[in-house]
Amino acid sequence: MNLHMRQKELDEVVISRAILAEQNAVMMDYLDLECAVVGGAGPAGLTTAAYLAEAGIKTGVIEKKLSVGGGMWGGGMMFPRIVVQDEARPILDKFGITYKEYQENYYVASSVEAVSHLTAAACDAGAEFFNVTMVEDVVVKGDGRVSGLVINWTAVEMARLHIDPLTLRTKYTIDATGHDATIAHQVKNKGGDLPPIAGEGFMWADRAEANIIEHTKEVFPGLIVAGMAANAVAGENRMGPPIFGGMLLSGRRAAELVIEKLL
Ligand code: 48F
Image (cartoon, rainbow, N blue to C red; front, side):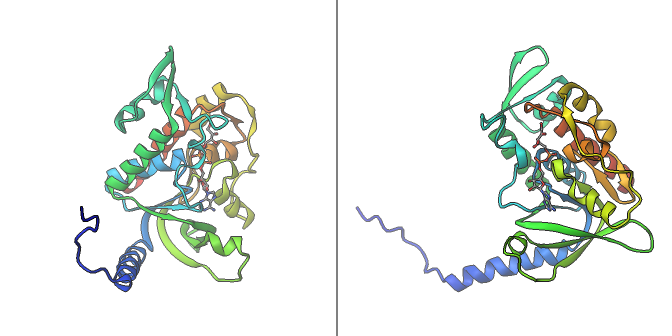
């Protein structure tokens, strides 16, 4: 039996050109965004991106790590399962994430399936992902809004190379960077008129989940906080062990806020 696949000759340089041409065109196009979801690859940001792209909003997802999924892959203590409560079940249903009822109001899903389905939904709806890319600063001009982001390759920071960043323009930015609330801190550190960022309080899942929607809001013109970043900015308690309903609901709320403004 002949194990060699019959195929046309492949040219490595053509492969390289295809990658560069396509990604260059996408990046040129996505330097002008309607919404940038920073840390877009955590559960809150993925959910936001999926809803925004579905609504037809030009959405770029900027993630500093190589992989998407943020803190969701690892479930709880590396047991790859997440728990969501009743209120978030419609989001699981919408994205085709299967789950089992453990007991009333506690539903268990696979963290791997959840990340994969949310990511696929965001991609299918047209969101573009820029991974291994980090936001290192924001653009605020005379209108006093976050109107752009200063981006660089994560590898540049890791290698401590002195290489200047590039900039993109955006109408709205979602800070979905998790516990660090990186973008809110950048605005605050540069003198932006934000209330003091208290950081998270002790673990108190019930309270944290109940309040996260309220904390998902525009905290500075053009900047909306979502997911754990919203709770960190508000000085809210932390949630967990891994209850993820609040992340999904907060992600959806952030998208709704942008959709209300832009459509
Ligand atoms: O941390 P992360 O998963 O945030 P989240 O969506 O979800 C929190 C839960 O995972 C969990 C929890 C639930 O009980 O409490 O912790 O709020 O995802 C945040 C993503 O932001 C990226 C980071 O790599 C991660 O994937 N990120 C952080 N800073 C930057 C960034 C930055 N400056 N630029 C780009 N990405």
